[in-house]
Length: 542
Ligand code: ADP
Image (cartoon, rainbow, N blue to C red):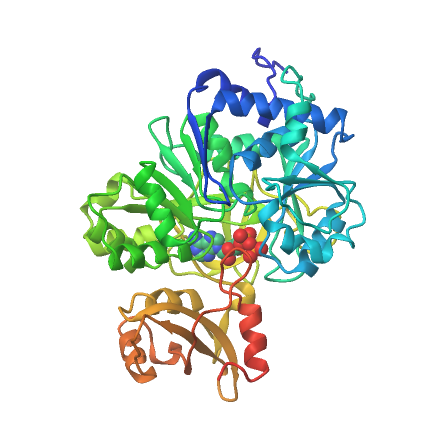
């Protein structure tokens, strides 16, 4: 055996913050804080405070290597400090999804055995109801408390007091690159939340790869608006990417209304942003309603987490000159597995075909592999037609859930079974049509609820549409479409089926339409189909 003679240099989040401080100390971190004030400082200042915080975690709060330390917070500079200080102390940064139910959060904190929780003062009311039932938490640290803070929580510490006591010459706790640096729980749309532990190495490799031009294409020329919550799969890796790429980081905390985000984009000259489809649909409508003076500097945004309708990709570009790129992933996959961008051979296509490619979920990034597994255990052809379940493996794909065994999450030969179903075309672009649990099987034929939803959302009068399967005597299942109309607009079911007929066979059309004011959503803004199915079963969706 002849080994290469290159140095062994561990891939860690320590090295990410060190790089950001060494090469881009002058880059800005801007936060619009929960109380509406603005906070600005540089990477160099962030670095110093992060060191202080790490020193306090170890020396005063008794955090040991491998301990889980939770955050319950909006996107802002202190949350960013925690992203690096907790692993810097050898521990595991565990952002909690503030939008889950009390029962779910209580379950998650107790299951993860979090030792410390860092809590935004503006979120205390959400935390108090279950705080007394948390069995492992030894310290609660409040961030951004005002002088009149009133809380029933016992023995609280204050974030800025801790920082003031810290030492900025603290040495990061040495870690092996395969140690855990962070964790997230799935949002439990398909069962109890499950814990996913990311390693220093997987975090580094995911960030380095997602930065590249075929994916996020982020550089030191960018000013990045981090809309995706830091509790949603580590904000898709962007906090790490901004330091590695030297992009300025701008964070909105709770100011997520479309008008506030647009205002921030204008004031801060944002060039790149990320967010789930709901956010971008809201921004589009707001821009239409209240056209801004001049152009936004936003050149592109990343959208993912749910399918993004092709019509909206086109309208963003035609109406406002803003491009978007679509990515796919899961909590279990760090998250980014694929991104959809056009390649050189696509340029001869007409605009409609180009948009259809961009609306697909995209091609795999280097470092991960995807296969499309059919029900009979054979791998589907790459023809854009043959369906199967996506199975993935790679550097940043889960090998097992935290403290859970035997849950049939992997194939016998070690691939992670995503539960997402779809096709892959000859160029490797995958297109997701459903989750295995959401599929509609009608008269022996699969119907794609995602395709029905995205097509309905292309209708000019529809704001949102979600499709579930409902029982049918003749066909076993048929689709039920729940639609939210834009202000003052309504369209009959027959007219909507006419609209769909250009794209679908007759048997695929929804059996019924239900008009809703809003579609039930999960903690990370996806259609909550489990809830919709139970509402239907209770007779409330008729
Ligand atoms: P949870 O699994 O807890 O709902 P995740 O954020 O991990 O939360 O969700 C992952 C799922 O979201 C994927 O398995 C897929 O079904 C869906 N998803 C993610 N990105 C896309 C996308 N670009 N298009 C369609 N569905 C997507």
